[in-house]
Amino acid sequence: MQLRKIKTRHIETHVLEGGAGPDLLFLHGAGGVTPEDPFLNALAAKYHVYAPLLPGYGASDECPEIRDMLDVTLHTYDVAGALGLKKPILAGHSMGGMIAAEMAAIAPNEVEKLCLICPAGLWLDDYPIPDLFAMLPYELPAYLFHDAVAGGKLMTAGMDFSNLEFLKAFLIQNARQMGMAGKLLFPIPERGLRERLYRITARTLLIWGDSDKLIVPRYAQEFKKLIANSELVSIAEAGHLVPLEQTAQTVAALGRL
Image (cartoon, rainbow, N blue to C red; front, side, top):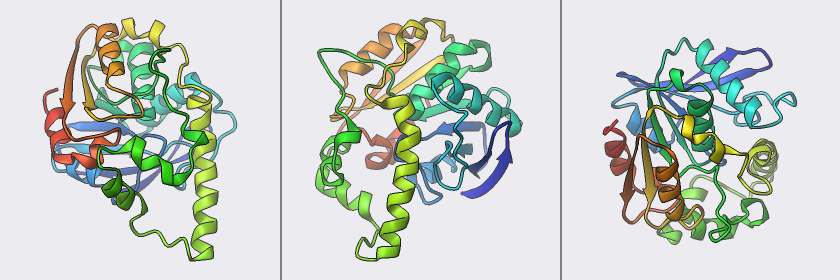
């Protein structure tokens, strides 16, 4: 994946781009995304992938003017416009799925194919979503992966926390990212999306890991009920980070659109 810089009204945004095929705009989750991401690179074998980094992620500028879900939604449309995209396949994972769903609801005529991978955005009192912002790093793999041990190794691959300069840069970057994510997900990831999902007219594919312990599969059924033209694909032996645990199956499922 190659890094591209574009300028929108407020900020400079960095976009990962690569591959050939139908245009696909991918919106990342709270953990961000890197050029080495195996899911992005697998997608690039079938699609021309554009993956913008949200404000505060990677080298994208922070932006105090982007304060809430509506601001983020309009900013992402601005990014798509600056990239010259016309009705790309719109896909998002977790927090990115929440943004993608908002985009499809706010401007239904602009989205024809929508893929939501374990999206945030709804809240069920009987199935509360754990607070990521209150977790210590060692607690995350159990919530994010089907195989917590293997997942923990994936999350820390290439990281040297004994190197003080690396640790300092990691903590600064993590604080920037969580500051942005907190605008959408803290204290709970509910911003009224439930009342807008009826407006989605796009053909919608929901992809969920059967072992998702962060946003449990009960939410998949709720999204399916609220989005009229939707299909659900459940993937076995996968948790919330299903694109990393079952990359090939996730890419194959997306091909149903």
